[in-house]
Image 1: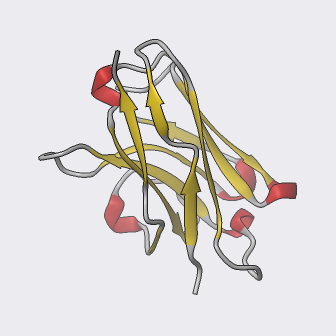
Image 2: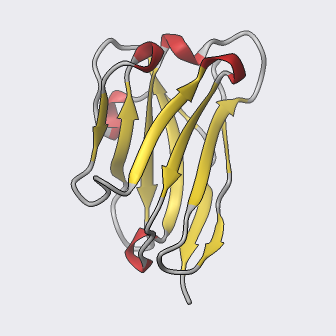
Amino acid sequence: QLQLVESGGGLVQPGGSLRLSCACAASGFDLDFYVIGWFRQAPGKEREGVSCIGRSGGRTNYADSVKGRFTISRDSAKNTVFLQMNSLKPEDTAVYYCAAASSYYTSLMSTDYGFWGQGTQVTVSS
């Protein structure tokens, strides 16, 4: 079964940047065959879709709250999906999860994804 692992979280000051990575925990899976989404969940709030990318790096979608600040991309050679986060704000503080869907359409709905990582904490604070 596909298992995902996130990395790259941490503490950053407002206006700073972080790059999150999503990779397979085990060999034998090619992330190019999956739609990959990034989600986040802040304390006391529901999980929300942040961004997603189609198979083999096609279509990308972003939540309105991160458009122009976050960029999702694939590195097929590394079998990794990245989320570059710039101009971070305190309201971006959350646990960030990557997820995979074996579908052909991009979605920011968590119910469309069947494989999830354990999450990585992002804290934006001065």
